[in-house]
Length: 114
Length: 114
DNA sequence: AACTTACATAGACGACTGTCTATGTTTCCG
DNA sequence: CGGAAACATAGACAGTCGTCTATGTAAGTT
Image 1 (cartoon, rainbow over the protein chains, first blue to last red):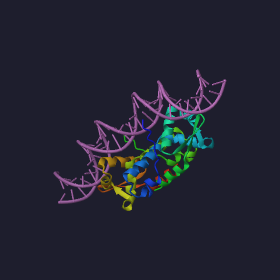
Image 2 (cartoon, rainbow over the protein chains, first blue to last red):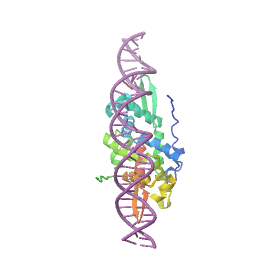
Image 3 (tube, rainbow over the protein chains, first blue to last red):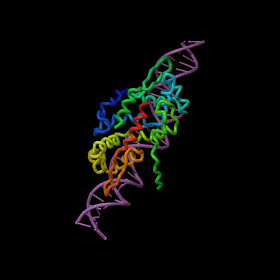
Image 4 (cartoon, protein in one colour):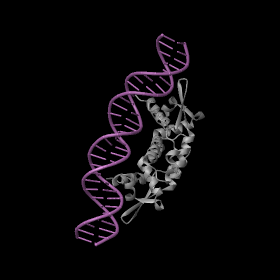
């Protein structure tokens, strides 16, 4: 296995003028990777649940039950979000806590303003 | 064929408190439909090219060449964006002109701010 | 009316994605 | 040390998606 991971996309670099100026293919692909990570109902719910938790952080075991999904499925989605830099992972003992990377969301929101 | 089309998703209705409060499954699915429409490199480029055109509008024949895609493929993507309410279609003679629905993008950008 | 141009629709096909079960890894505790 | 708890990884499978070719439709032109 090759652990190809992954300098998360630099949001600003891939569309310095937002969506108002022509965007090249590589930049568009990077942006799409980021937006694809958000564009899933389960992951949208995950984000909202993490944000709504105490201290705006949650561990996997707190997320499986409200979403009615298996633990591996939740772990998979959290990995997608982590690889995209949209959430952050912190291991404390046996638990792993996830919290939302607010800056990243601000950058993306800014970009979509056109 | 059933022309099931499509009251575009009401952005504000599906996440009135943004991503800071728990989002239910149906709302998350509606949001995902919207974001999936954006989360494709070709469609991101299309949006940027339309915005960068004269009067911020473009017809299909102006978009196939810079994207190096066939006309049906471009038409397909424009349909996806139109169904999501992200661009608007106006037929003038033989040409069809597309322009970006700025309000929609503002709403979505606002929503992602968390 | 016939032809051309601009666009849409239909159908096919390979690639990707979301979910599951099964299993591995790490950490804590008795 | 041995067991349990929390999480990750691997592999499988059905469904979705992006692209193409082929064809249909509508509007303008001669």
